[in-house]
Image (cartoon, rainbow, N blue to C red; front, side):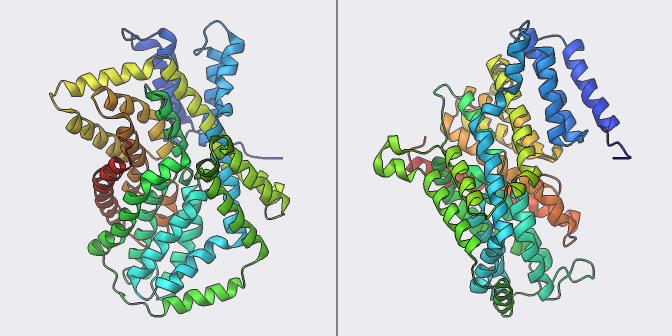
Length: 491
């Protein structure tokens, strides 16, 4: 039996409760907003405060939120049965299961060793210079990104150990003053590739489907961004950003060791230790190929819409194959707490954000924000750029990308449209920026504490590079992306 309780953290919990009660009981309901919509906002803001303050793990906070929505009946006053159905409605969202199942599938990358094999193989090809190693790490990230919704598992769990082993092989360690040889540079590249690859695919980080859901709910035409549409839109600006980022980091903090003729030799030795490609790896590669084929909508393009396979159905098919073949066991799935945690918090936050939209609160916030910026007399381009900068750089105040997107995306998206921004253009800019902003701090997403915690960089170095790369990435996605999306006739 457990001898020690691990209850909710009192201080952040009290702050979250206080914020909820103040909004609910003290602040008057604004004109044009229904009482139950305002009460739901109180619960929503309190939930976000609890997540930011880490009163409980995000899944635990989400369970509390679901319970409160069901008990208070704010979504359906006077109808307790419907209120419960509303509180649980998030679990019926197919995008939630897409991400949860994709996280389960990604276990196979680490279990079979395929993820490490890809990284070392690229280094064996391009690792004769430090810059080549940086590009090898970045493009290994990119290859893994479509099937790794946990950007933390990808950047921190798969790529980071490879980066550390390479740095150590050149005598560059975090704790003996040798980080500047090569380790600092590779650590900064290791991390700053993560936000870019996260922006490139719907399935590259867990909050992306939340963006897709909020865009669908927030557009008059009900814009649906498919997996293939997202990937195609991100292709050109994403590749440009991946090519530019290692050069930017190199210019700011160049490594002392610039030529690494032994790196390919080291990588080949690691590949020899992994042995020949195993049967589980072949099966995993086959499953990933099938998933990319189906997620990109190839059957529908070749044979017509009646042959379309929904992305979530494809994900379940891929997971089923991995279980049937024994690459993954059911115990592997059960032990993957991250996947089940994602399903729970995603369901709760999507549910609350969705009902804030249905009850008119989001449109009221958008009108309020839009009126304030509109009063400056700006055209839609500088006005939405101002919105974008506030949205991105407010991430300094968030320790969770999910919390940030949930708290701000819908209102800022609606405000931009109210200011006159083309819906699809604004959806793409704001959506991709939701990943780009991860680069800013050492706590901005789950990958950051892992790589920063390895000790290769100082806090000042991390924040300096993070800010510069965020500016460069925003410029690339706005300018290069805008031109590319115009060519694709997306706006």
